Amino acid sequence: MKLLILGAKGRTGRLIAERAGNQGHEVTAFTRATHGDATDREAIAAAMPGQEAVISALGRGNSFKSQQLMSRAMDVILPAMKREEVQRLIVISAFGVGETFYEAPFIAKVFFRLLLRHLYADKAIADDFVRHSGLDWTIVCPTKLTDGQRTGAYRAGEHLEFGGLPKISRADAADFIVKQLTDPAWIHKTVIVST
Image (cartoon, rainbow, N blue to C red; front, side):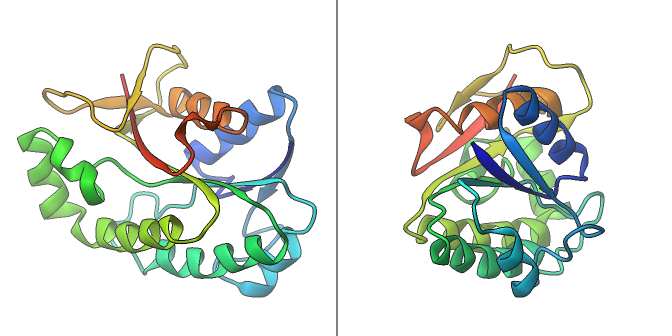
């Protein structure tokens, strides 16, 4: 499958690109250095022709300031996909955004409200854009991402039970995300992934 990965230089995006390439997908790793900004209409439009799926691993890294990155990017990405008839979209959001907030343990909810409020508000807007896009979307909400190894021992569901501060390795999250390119089970759904 011809695959456009946005945020492909990030810690999670790099693993997704590597995993997808190893699975035989033809990967275009969209980066600021080689393609431009993911909120630039011309840059996204230039990268979209010929693609069969898009994975967004965009994020603000360690910053707590959203700069409305996700909502601005989706406002560009979704129309470009429609113009080029690219139907499959997988977006990494975050555990605690939107309805997944109610799945979180109490201590995680406090953290989301205090430190991640602005980032999560932007992600929630972007996720709503995706849900109303008419595309074959999947929104993936990993719990706290770590730099551990790929284990394959993770759970996925719209509702999961947790205690403490749940987490998942970026490698396991990447494994799940790449699997969604050929598995329709989570199309038009928001899925939490965690160990």
